[in-house]
Length: 133
Image 1 (cartoon, rainbow, N blue to C red):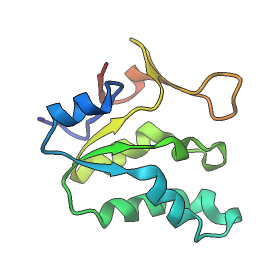
Image 2: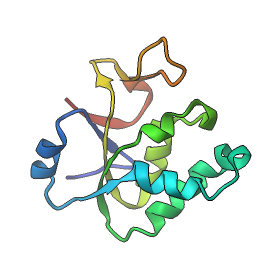
Image 3: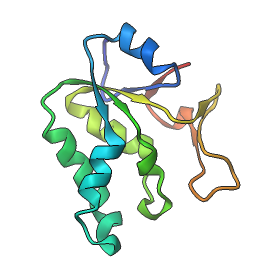
Image 4: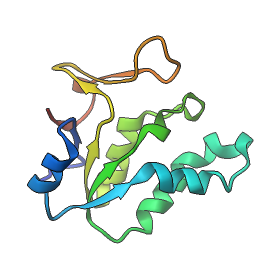
């Protein structure tokens, strides 16, 4: 996979398809790892620590090509993260494919549904990303 700048790939394809196509990539199941680390931090400070903790998790992983799955934890409204922007920043030193846990259409990446507090809708044109659907 070629990369220009800080592109990340957002995939809504089945994980098995992504794994077979990008078989040189390692898989990082983020949710469980990040939640275990965040549980070590006082609840009132987690929103401030989530980004740093995520960076530490990736820094401790020596793989340069990653498929990152189970990212739902990042949509916790208390964290107030721009999840896509965060992954773009994290992709500066490695190739990253993010397995999107929501929907993708021609204009938006969507997580959850409007009646839930964790609902997010990202305009694809606002980010320098590649989407697989």
